[in-house]
Amino acid sequence: MSTVEPTLRSTLEGIPAYKAGKPPVVVPGVTSYKLASNENHHDPLPSVVMAINDCLTEIHRYPDYASVGLREAIADRFDVPTSHVSVGTGSVGILQQLVQITAGPGDGVLFGWRSFEAYPIMTQIAGATAQRVPLDATATHDLDAMLAAIDDTTRLILVCNPNNPTGTVVGAQALRDFVAAVPSHILVVIDEAYTEFVDPSSTADGLELYRQYSNVAVLRTFSKAYGLAALRVGFCIAHERVSEALAKVQVPFGVSTPAQVAAVASLAAEAELLARVDVIVTERHRMSAALAGLGLHPAVSEANFVWLSLGEQTLDFAGACEREGITVRPFDGEGVRITIGEPAANDRLLEIAASWAASRAS
Ligand SMILES: Cc1ncc(COP(=O)(O)O)c(C=O)c1O
Image (cartoon, rainbow, N blue to C red; front, side, top):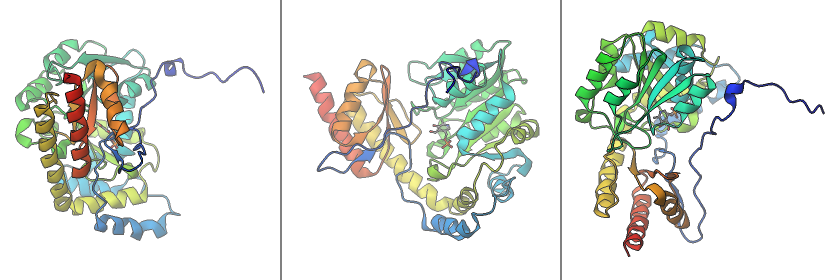
């Protein structure tokens, strides 16, 4: 074999590997839980499983290239033209397309930090430059600082609302003012992966802004509230110029037939799915109050997870959880993100947190 290796794009050097949430750790005698990936713990709905089963006899055929049925169902649900709807392999797949159509070497992609870890990865893959703006003291996007950070290179702004991993949202008027102030040649993507878990009075709906501004796009997913994480299907609602560009860079046949069918069936079962979301939101309130009662100061979350800014004690807390069979998502030196799971998992997490907090105090 030659000692000379293939030449790859230099921009790939230094890209951090995406860290997926760890699977549950096996601890003898206790049920393990994964609270590390912001998944929906509810089993898939029977009607959705049936729709998937019914299409399995067709899997020797390619899926509908343009995902017409799914795009029409989304358009119908959100009262937008079908031509404004793009679907992709999870919203992360469309995120990559959004970066591809806006930014290359010499261009800036601006986002709050810390936020969804795919943002800097996608930016660097495109050879563009990440313009990271620190969150404020409440772990929320600092929209004024983001506005001030825009420069001549900025091509794309990502507003993660609610923000992953902190769960915080930006205020409704603050978001409206921000979008109004961004120069209209810059695409603003409002990433609403967790929007179904949000109290609508706490922030602005990205779709309201998309209807007003041609440079606003909204990114959503079937992975979280709709519980289809394994099927990889997300969508973007954007005006024609952006939607048409997204179609040019899409992975051909990226969204499989089972994914398309399951997403359509999920929209048809939305009331049932949103009732499950209510269960998670109620649990989130319970968890947030209990963690606050332990003096752990959770950030104000509007998502299906909570964030504890534990700084240097982050890995210690995550280790304490692992020893009791629970995986959470630590960000070393910053904090830990805890997905809201089934009540038994949440109870265990709170017990662990209580003894951890007590040992820290002693
Ligand atoms: C903010 C945010 N956006 C997008 C995604 C991507 O989700 P998916 O690719 O499963 O649709 C995630 C997943 O965790 C996320 O947290």
